Image (tube, rainbow, N blue to C red):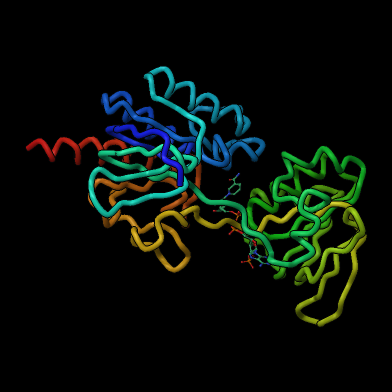
Length: 314
Ligand code: NDP
């Protein structure tokens, strides 16, 4: 590793979703001079969503990327130092904590707020990887445009899958929503929207076996889990929407994680097992996973960090 520069900061925040940016707003206002690295997906998961209708304060709804831009601008207004860069290594064994950005820039942080969120999960088929970017996607908002007038499939039965199907129904000719059970997990409001959309067809009890094509996707092979019968649906796009995994790889064997890799925090706080290290947003929440709960825990993390730093002076 080529270490080119070293810097000391009072409060380092990793992640730029609602949790990280809200932590930055609070930390900046508390004069912790936070430095925030945006990570692999600046703005977080909301930048790949469409309308957000449940964040308080937006009676007409707001689109995800716009909301993230608004929160970022709010943090910048209080002089939060928001930077491009990815944390590539962490050493939390002693204070100050050491975090390497893009392998070459070493940060010595008095306190660390981890808000690195969660990323899309994949089905794990070889053909899914082969066609990634050539007909397979995990983001309808990013890629739906390419499938105007075509037939596409969405895999999953949660709110994300339904949201993706609903978005795609406005562009594609037909959308197959393929779910492994005979009942959707999504909220009732979302289900109603799906059932009312004429060009969305539910394909129940079906598990993808393979994605077929040559250079691009031509069809998806499914197996009905109840009958065992195989079926091939001609589609040109496959959108995988089966949930997320927490971005906690950097902290394995340093922080206490649960069996799915989510950081464990002390109930009612954002404290991890290492004093001075806090976790906020989806990286520590597999239950609520909402923008508003992520933002709230970002606020908690900044307050926890501020009080922890103050306690060192006592
Ligand atoms: P969920 O975990 O809620 O749903 C994942 C879906 O994928 C489930 O239906 C699951 O099936 C299915 N699935 C999982 N693994 C596989 C697999 N290997 N093969 C086939 N199917 C699989 O994730 P979401 O991303 O949909 O939602 C996450 C959270 O975010 C939820 O709390 C949701 O409410 C929230 N959300 C809210 C939105 C909004 O309010 N606008 C928009 C998007 C998300 P099964 O049901 O059988 O387990």
